[in-house]
Image (cartoon, rainbow, N blue to C red; front, side, top):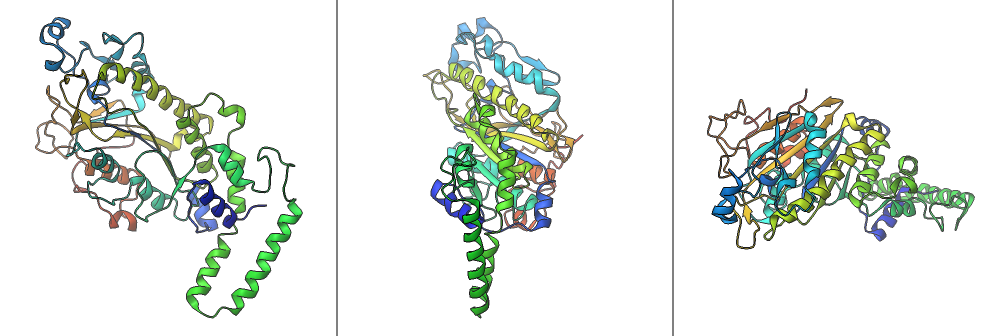
Length: 441
């Protein structure tokens, strides 16, 4: 038998961090009905002109004559899927049989995929850009939107925000639970087992654990009656409540995938599998994930083939996991990065930092599909943002899509824009601009 305080203590010993508060029955019920958000961060600054905002060279002759420093890319055509465009990386001279994953991804998911191009990051610094895309502001200390979603959608949930990568500053809005892997969770869940996967391999029997729990209850009853200071009395009550969450954790264990199901899955997919189990148990609202290796100052073509061949099959696999868990119609995926890369190549055949980027969004919120098969935002031939009308999202105005607009759109999408936490940490853009950046069908 496991009480929440033991769980929290062991989490600390294992490098996990969770909230100490206990969920009320009402909060638990609400947490089980909200939508699930997955935030993916491409660490290092991705080359969006090689992904979702393609800028092909005019011809192979142009590439051969001008050289890589004077062209936007070394591919000469554009891939299309529905209304979306993507870079055909398999046509790069040094693709070596790779690069097909991006086309496979777009062809499979274009109907549910929203691409936001021409995002003015206003910075080309890694830390600032990472904070900006997920917090909607460049100022230090701003919380990730994941924390705001956790606070707004699942207040009091023990694992409302699970961090498995990416920007996870919370500013005290909600705690971040850092989970290593599912085996660690099982060891935390069953501290009295020598082997967490064997029910009868126990250090302590269920009867002994029950006697320990009864002794704790008896001690609390005595100490609570003796305490007269309101502040300490409240603290004791909170501590006692934190010990009553064993049923919540048992629910998580019930939903965790089996050892066989984990075989062959990447760490990122396993993290989503764990978070999806916590969501189904009513303990979680959002998970952040991420990979590095996108800071391609050298050999950008070859590196992007490898990066995209790694990323997009994982995102597709995550959609399958959500389907298998029966929660895909309540789950959305947001993909962003620090910034973009320069239009031309440098001397190392790489690309340097560029303060224009893109975001990709797909999935469902509360059973309604995000309006996909759409591109919002435009860049010119030099990969500069084109001015838009902030009311129609169409070219012809004088506004650029910024990180604050994306932040506002995510908050509005989940209906948390008027929560105390969201008001405490506003984005750096007016909510009146680009109000329909991300919409539902």
